[in-house]
Image: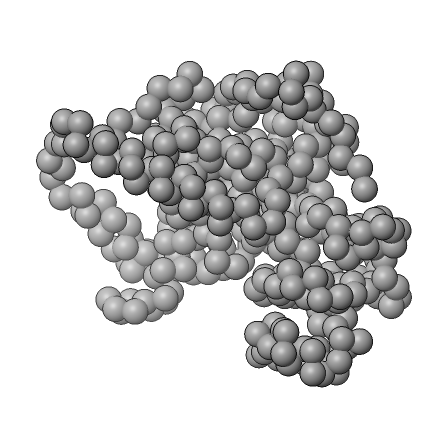
Amino acid sequence: YANTGDGVAIAYRNGVPLMDMEFVQFHPTGLYRHGILMSEACRGEGGYLLNGNGERFMENYAPDKMELAPRDLVSRSEQTEINEGRGVMADKQGIYLDLRHLGREKILKRLPEVRQIAIDFLGMDPIDVPVAIQPTAHYSMGGIPTDVDGRVLADADGNLVQGFFAAGECACVSVHGANRLGSNSLLEASVFGRRAGYAIAEFINGGAKLHPISGDPAEKNRGRVHKLFTNEGELAEHILAELRETMTEKCGIYRDETRLTEAKEAIHQYQTRMKEARVMDKSSRFNTDLLAALEAEHLVTFSEVIVAGALERKESRGAHSRTDFKPRDDDNWLMHTMAHKNGTSGPRLSYKPVFVDFDRYPPQKRAY
């Protein structure tokens, strides 16, 4: 609910390529219909995942690890239960997270924030009832391509965008490959944020030529805001709601060519509609309506690149799961996707090889 892709969308619209955007990690315990993360600690403390029949269904997917299996495996298992009609809630689109057996004292001591979130947003107290959850988009393995010093890459050949640095989740130095392990993003941000800081200082102290910005850099954005205030089209929030439904249903945990093609066509329509979109609130301060509209523009851009990469990558790898191309295909797809802005015709994709010491670290199949 908070991952709006602002940084990568701004970079992309200004000519910087994006890398590996089709790899989106889904977290298995997002709050039903809200996407707010219910901490990993829920399962770590011994929480159960139940389907609509009251079954601990992870026994069918990871009998040894059960609820403690990797995030992508648990998320796919949940989605399979939902797709096969064993979900919960009126629309059968949820799964139950059951903490009741942990007892009141342990929940209050170890999971107080989780309990309060469930009460505030769903009116469900995990002490008394199972809480409705569903897989939610959590982390992007892709982003702005960088080297190990945070310097942004301009293309697949390793040329640099001089003076541009990125670190953290907006960046893709590709230490996570196609599927991040839990907590590694904090380590990535700490390590490469530090390296980028040193590299920036070195760049400036090394005699970098800094040029004054020509014109008024804020004028373009003032124009965007003015259009949102004066347009007479539909509300931007309505387009955003449709985009979320489209990405969940057609480019979510399970993907195939038909649904991805439908998503691509829908996003093209959203782009057209966003040009005439408006906001209800015209105030100049603390305007959350305007903020949401600007984020919607970023999300439409962000989503277009995700769908393009997912549609072209005809295999399943890490967090990218194609039901029509299930095997991982190292012969043809062991490579990075580079998406370049190509006018109004959608992203232009190119690819670059993955550089790994394959003699030392040969690709292997994951098994649980």
